[in-house]
Length: 85
Image 1 (cartoon, rainbow, N blue to C red):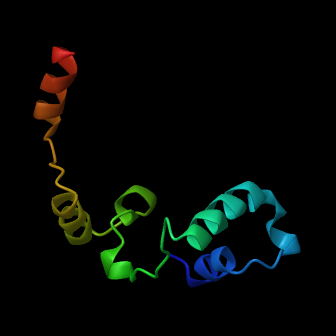
Image 2: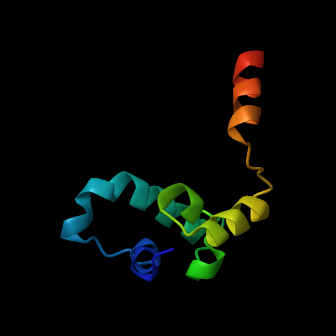
């Protein structure tokens, strides 16, 4: 979701501050060059992964739950599921 990460992935120039991601960088760069994957910027409004990485307001959380096809379980439902396993 970062424009700078996309730019780095598409630019074959080696950057000294990104040595720690060299393996992932080369893997992604190789697939971008082959056309296997295409990188593009996704606005925050459409970042479904936010539900897993950020503390969200209730309405935003519920929206993302629905978009991902997930459902919220009440504590009682969750306890029932836990006991059945």
